[in-house]
Length: 337
Image 1 (tube, rainbow, N blue to C red):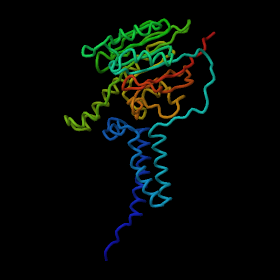
Image 2 (tube, rainbow, N blue to C red):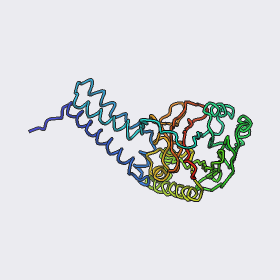
Image 3 (spheres, rainbow, N blue to C red):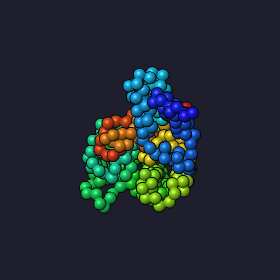
Image 4 (cartoon, rainbow, N blue to C red):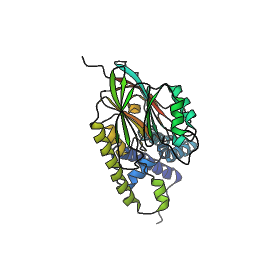
């Protein structure tokens, strides 16, 4: 007796259940997974919107077929993707102002791809008290004034530079340390103390290691499992060095930069367990910063010590680099009596 072939309706039902289960598994991996395992590293390196493609196709098919039960399964899968996987955030209300308010901005300027004047215009549009710049060195293959041009275009700011890192502040600023991190010597953790009308706080600007897993896949120089384990170890050593640097600094503390990490990566979660993410605390939407023209990833972050309150955080639609900037309004703790 021949076995009956499954009908198209049954196939659609099975695929939809598999899609929902995959979305649930991905959400769990993003919360608890370790990048040392190549499937986790690959998933964390992909733009999160990729995970919506399969359930969206299945939802369209189930709608065309008027299979509403299966459509409901695919809606559930899409909600998992749009929420936990893609990192949707919604702030219910603004935190009351208690203490001294200040505005912080971080921006990877892509080695002056649009010129320092365009960066300066973007900064002036946001009126930050402090700005952290990455890929802001002086490059022999780039024409123009580069860092000096930015300094000239923002005469109201004080500047501290270290390699490819610049910190600018409207308030007096003192360099505390230029701490080397595992990776390029031109990308240290630049630590400064900002004196905001008698209140001092610490700002650290970093540009962390990229995974470059896409380049590795095409180069095939070593097995993917070997590469992911080795890179996860390098990234972990960089995170440990950064946390040691932060621990030695006086507070309150603000950590800004291009982390080359999406929030779901374990390396990013290690940092945010100690220094909460400003966008997760007070942002709306997805906060994607990369790429500027079509943002699909959140690779740039502002983290704060727990004695700092985030009142608002957003990604302005400034296009003067391949990254968008991140801006946060924060409240410094009240001065102890």
